[in-house]
Image (cartoon, rainbow, N blue to C red; front, top):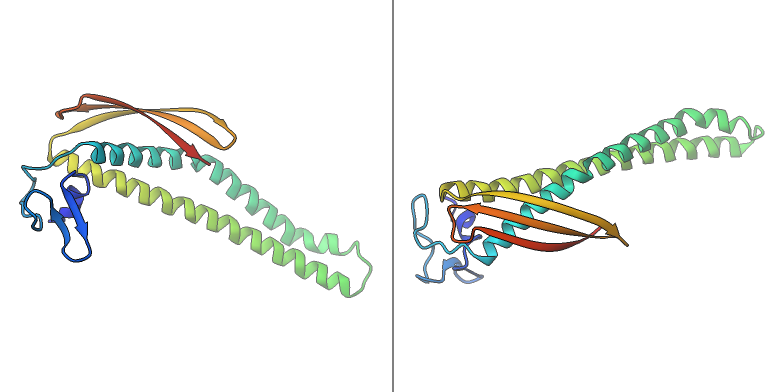
Length: 185
């Protein structure tokens, strides 16, 4: 059993370099089978739940822009590579012809590589955000806690966007919370 999944959401978690993960109630390493009867899900749990869902949704919403950017950069890169000969022919037959052609091809290849790095970074961020969200959801399922989350993204102003997070919980002491986050892009 991976206790850190449960304990990372609990207010009773203590982590130090000497002992590692311990419980504040027992001062020992966690010892439970499937669920902990003493788990204390409160502010830490709410913050991690909201933030994991917010981060996943933010990355998912940015997906189309990254894909559009990827295709644009691929097209620019291909045009630079293919068009290098046509543009280079405009320069008289000198050493600059070769320099220009090699430079345009190099720039085209660099643009394609940059585009693929951006797409790979998006996929990695999305995978990590989904993993974190699923990790929290898995623990909540074990405790019978379910939730509905509504994210209200406000208008971006100078690179900062406010997001209202409405969380409705079932089978937990708190029923409803609303939090405002500021995201810098």
